[in-house]
Image 1 (cartoon, rainbow, N blue to C red):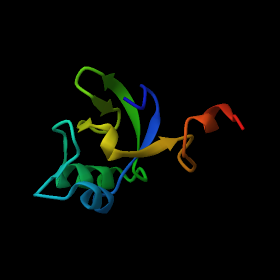
Image 2: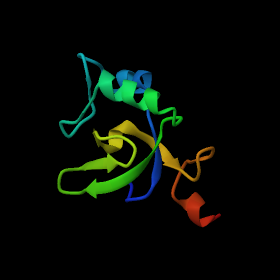
Image 3: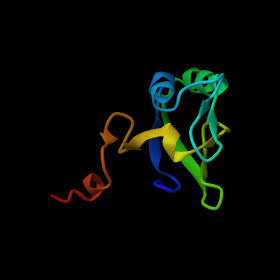
Image 4: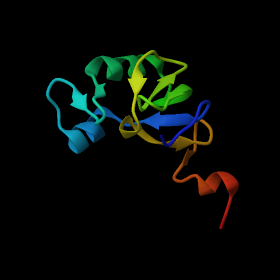
Length: 99
């Protein structure tokens, strides 16, 4: 698992996942987790710029739960870690400002 509880993450858009994993009504994102059109609609309804906060990390099952929305999320559905609502982090070294 790449992320931990309380991390803010940006969720990929439907087109990105469709391109990566294909689609058959829903998108199979590995580990038997699917990204569905209902998940996409719920994210859009939140008006959160696709940024969610991780509530729990379920390591043995390889999924996350989010504070804002009740679905199971996998690493493959997450685009990146976000510092705040405006600035995505491309890697964890940026958090520590290591150069």
